[in-house]
Length: 350
Ligand code: ATP
Ligand code: MG
Image (cartoon, rainbow, N blue to C red; front, side, top):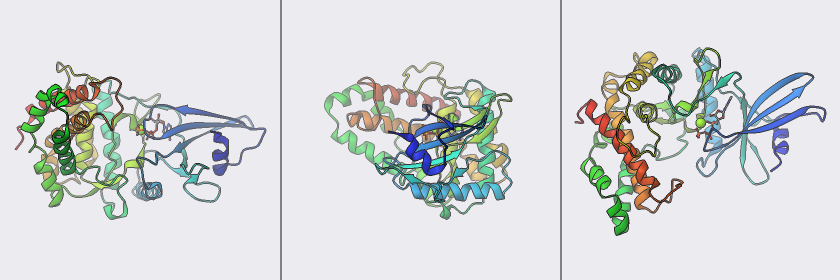
């Protein structure tokens, strides 16, 4: 498609301007373009993104959440750069192209890089700390102001039910292939119960969370290597912050690739401690004792549920996750099970 049509809904470019548009392929969900405009010897950069409408059913609600959070961060003296939206020429936060796709423009954060896998404990700490500052400035934000971007995303009861249904409907051959993973999951099927219960009774209070706090969603400074900006705010939602912590554990402490089935040396306790320290660095005072007592448990549950999701998809003949070979989802399941086994050693589950 010709991107200049959509670009020109956001900014007016002159024919004499030297406009270059480059795809950034780090993300998996949206289409992300870096726009550079050379104007009178001065280059301006922007990020132009097409929102994945299949995953995010309500782009307007997402943009509203981002505005509410950005404003709140600003009011609360957030010390980092914010992912500010640049409205289109009509003053709207989204432009719609001829195919009905939603586009937005955001400020480009210069002189930064992002990583897809934690490289050392300092980096794990830095990412978790940067997110901790972000959380600390929105912990007092009324979660009712934020519409869930993906309803049911943190509904673990549903994940378990989907697994049970997939197991019932699965072919004998798939069940046979996955027998030891099915045995492990069935043996631990009660693990998330306490989590679900505490979500329901409010002991894990609703807060505004990022819900996708992986390392590639923190931009680091090219020179100081400090966290500069929390990006990818599409998943903002009201939920327990223990989900975010659990997901950080899931993505930061796994030393292997997510589809590597080898159990040896999968978990870094050093990274785990760094993530916890970073996460608590700015949130500790505001979180309840009960939330803090359940951090290790949250890691176990979030990783366990991810194992359940991969196994469900394997039993369901690979409908959801993209696979590169027939047992890809089974290898992903093994990887998460290996990780959860290490996490279960940290603290016996109640
Ligand atoms: P994900 O797979 O994490 O869901 P996504 O498709 O939602 O990704 P983003 O995470 O928003 O996309 O952006 C993809 C990449 O584009 C980032 O990893 C980062 O490299 C770059 N990027 C995004 N926004 C900015 C920005 N404002 N400034 C600089 N680089 C950015
Ligand atoms: Mg991202």
